[in-house]
Structure formats: C-alpha cells, structure tokens
Length: 302
Image (cartoon, rainbow, N blue to C red; front, side, top):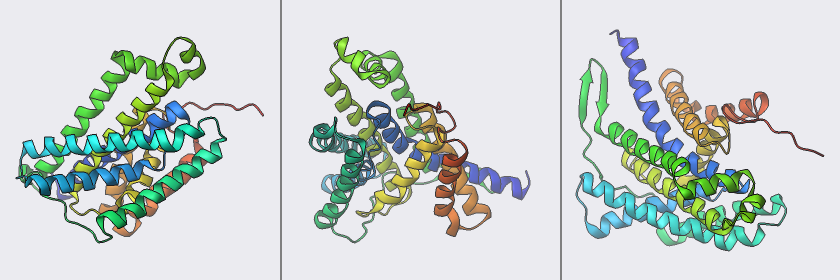
C-alpha cells in the first residue's frame, strides 16, 4: 500500500472516530427538534457540564485508567446531563411551549449563555486537563496506518449507544410514543399519551448522549473549559442540519460526514480552515438542500 493511500486511510480512521462524537451530540439536537420543533442551543452546554462532571468524579474517586473507569465516567456524565436536560425543559421551555417560536429560540440562547458564564464562575475560566480514561496504545499497525485503542473505544461506545437508540425508538413502547408525538402531538394526546412525559424522556435521552460525547471528547482531546461546548455544539448542529434535522439516521450520517470532511481538510489543506469548512457546508446545504440529505422537504401554507 503506497504512502499516499496509507495517509488517506489514516485520515479516514481519524475522521470516523471524530464523526461518531459529532453524531452522538447531533442526535440530541435532532431528537428535541423532532418532538418540539425546537433548536435546543443549550444542548452544547449540557455537553460541557457532562465533561466537568466526569472530570470531578475522576478526581474524587481517584480513578485509574481502564474499562471500569470509562463505564463509571459515562454513567456519571449521563446522569448529570439527564438531570440538567430535564431541568432546562421543565423550567425554561415548558412554560413557553405555546408561545411564539421566536420566544423559545431566544430563551434557548439565553439558557446557553447562562450556563456558559455560570460554569466560568463555578469551575473557573482556565482550562483543565481531563484525566486519563484509557491507556492509548497501537492495536494494529500497517505501514504508516495505526489503529489506536482510543479510536476503537470511541467508535465502539458510539456504535453501542446509536444501536441502543435505534432499538429504543423502533422496538419499545416509549419509542413508539415518541414517534407518535413527533408525528402529531394532538392526536397522540387524544390517544392517551402523556405529552409532558414523552418530552421529558426525549430530553433525558438526548442529554445522556451529549454526556457520552463529553467523555469521549475528553478522552481523545484532554482539555476542557466552560466554553468548550460552543464550537463543537455548532458543528454537531451543522451535522444535524446536514443529515436532515429531525431525522435520527440523518444525524448519524451528518456527524460521520462532518468528521471525515474536517479530517480531510486538516490533512490535505490546513487546520486553519477546519472550522470555516464546517460552516461553509451549512451554507451550501441551506442553499441547495434546506431539508438536509435525508430530510423531507415540507411546504408551509401562508
């Protein structure tokens, strides 16, 4: 295998690893939008709080690198993020559910800013080094191509939760209820479905996935700070729009494509353009295919 091909394969591995993280966070955006038609901009700050929760948990328990540590930190981060997600929905969004969409959008931005700057007060503005969750080692080496334990762990964890989400939505009663509310909340309510319970469950699931993503990011890029959610949250949002906002499979596809695109830009152009490229994709998608790759175009009556 030539050097150029080896380099390309390495970028693909790195891109899929990064894309699986984007996909996990994008799923939170797309699930809430599918139920409430709301862009939850505070979702990126839920992810940030999950990173700090796992950071302080690792320090408190004085954890050692290993699979058990990964499971513990995932559980703690998911729990904290779930609680925060439910509180945001109950205190900020539910009272405005019948208000104009613009009011809710402004509230979402306000909650995001509130969490960002509250975190700077509580955690401090300086970056912190995330603890070592797993020992990084080369599992397979083929020429210049390396398959590292971090990439396998990230992809494996991401795949487990994505498959679990698919099963939950398509093979459980709560998933059936979520799909019913997403399709027609009024009809679902008339059929006896508790709308508030389903919406809270959606926030729990979406926030939990953000918690998973926060641990994986901390493991791969071990530096966290109160503003860490801003950029990766925007990229995950772009991934959700790219795949088709409101479409679960679209969020996964968009996340993987975002990760691959970003890695290719870094590898073959310059790391300077990695962030600009993400938003360039958003502009192109909105211009040529506003519904996203897997989204369905809808017509609004005026």
